[in-house]
Length: 121
Image (tube, rainbow, N blue to C red; front, top):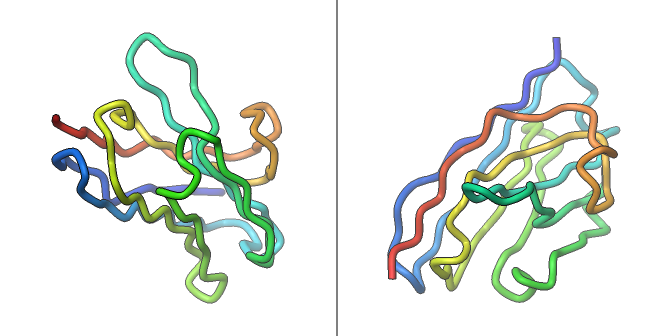
């Protein structure tokens, strides 16, 4: 059974930083591309970042480029999202997903339950 579990969310002031972690089990992790998405109340789920199976290729939404960094550790079966210079508009539930590299949620096979990030002004 595949499990994807996010952690590291919380409340932070604007300009601060958070590091999200995602642990995946039940799959051969190093074969999977991974991604982060987010969803604010009343809005559609949106792409944040993705990383290919080896970690060599990364993609970012324009809204987070230069502030967020996605990385992975295949030995630990984990993917990370370092978020710096956070803004109130970054407030959302953040989801980790396995299986895709694109910005389309439909391309991902497995999803976590999400972790809340709240940025106060």
